[in-house]
Amino acid sequence: MNSLVRIRWTLLLAGVVPAMSFGSSWFFAPRPTRAAAPPPARQHTTVYDPDPQHLWNRVHDAFRARIEGKEIDPWELDPYLWRNQDYLAGEVVQKAALDVLDEFIARKGHTLIKDPLKRALLQRDLWALFDSLHVPRWAAQQKRPQVELATRVARIIPRLSLTAEEIKKLPNNYADAVVAKEAKFLPADLWEPKGRWVLLGDKTQLPLALGHVHFFGGRSTFFVFLRLPDGREQTERYLLALRKLAPGAAPDPFPPGTAVALVRQMQLIDDRGKRVTTNVTESLRMREGPFEMKLNRRAFLAGKPSLKAIGVDDLERDDLLLMGNNVSPGPSKVLTSCPRCHDKVGGINSVFSALRFRPLPRTPAVRPELFAANREDVEMSSWAWTANRYEWGLLQGLIQNGPRD
Image (cartoon, rainbow, N blue to C red; front, top):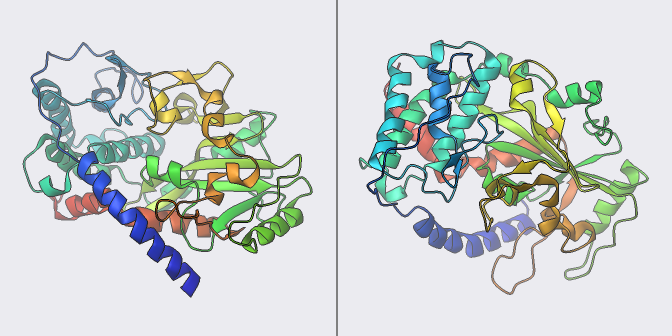
């Protein structure tokens, strides 16, 4: 690690760690268990099996989010993300949640379905659930509702794991969407290693799209692509000019026709406990338009092309659209969400990966050293970031020290 990288990491730790410590004390504060009326009758679903009472369907129903007391669409891409909600408040709701997890463990629920697509989705969702429980650091050894739930979820997650070979065989739904011509704006050459699109990396080895990475807890890998109108050589020259830019100097504006794309791909935990970035694309966002595509659960589980274009009237929860910074439950129109943040400044500065962070208040933003990366570079920076998260360490500890099957 060169001296510049060490300086950047020192500034990061000096500014971010105290802020994280303060934020953690508030964020992980225990939530009171309150007396609650019995939960409303659930609208049972058939996500995993035609029988609504199938154990996998009941697990799915037990934890999917609500908006103002109403359950969200069970087929939503991220049904278990319910940050900032009093979701499991009340002993009745907590007991029902524990009961269905205990039944899954006792009945060896992981053996009821062998389909790797279904196993991948349930593990992915339960991983999100685990992180959403917000187990306080000081209470990890206590018998609290969050700890009880986390212990059970941690026992189930490895039971659903796929082998490395099974993960490789999961569908490349981006390639499927290109073949099926799912959207006119979909770049067929986005993933070509030496094509017109340049995959961005940071020489300081921090992940780009850090706001997205943080909101999704590092459970997805985010790839940022840039394409200037004349193709790869022009784009790489632009990145070189950015790296040579004097501190405080304004970067050159984007030439007309510049395109930016953000791809989110699913991570799984394989049968060896290793995080793996799959070929399953969860979403594609493009600044032009704007355009967006998202994984469709129905099509994915049916083995059909599953990356579908978002329409102008399609809605989603504000908490997801604005990554936890919502002012209302929503839902709101998906395609109007990105410009709320990214159009505030122009050119490369509207790609917040190019601004990064301010180590201390009133200090200049530290710019990453953007370069033309490969897929492995991006995956490694994402995994390294996740490895330092408290939630990942807690999950590993519970798995390794929990009951053996």
